[in-house]
Image (cartoon, rainbow, N blue to C red; front, top):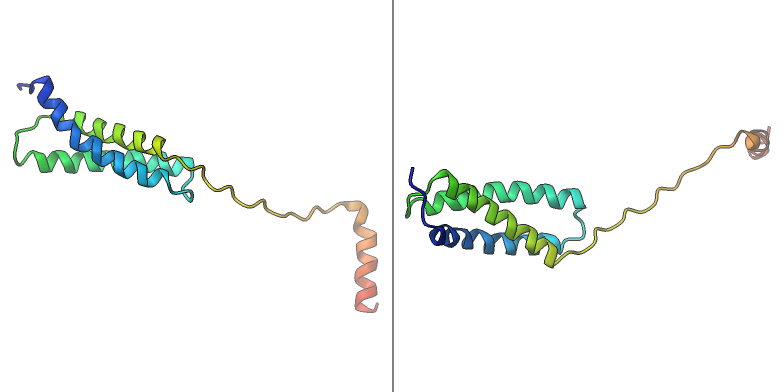
Length: 119
């Protein structure tokens, strides 16, 4: 297995870097995604996008496994760079209102219910 020259490998990573940068920039601006969602989307998108990009380039240039790995990593690097550049903090969920039941109030509560029901 002969590995391409270093400059050729760098040129193979540029499209993945740019596409990942755009996708990361778009997802980073979405405040509806949590931190976990953004990172898990990044891992999935980088893996699938890098593989699709490497398969599409392999029709023109013979690519080996090292170049495929480099393209996936370049895609991931672009994604996380775009995510960092356009980071919007996620929306905080509304606090949940809870009713706190205290046993001290049990007798007063029962009396109020009896008064309302007419008993």
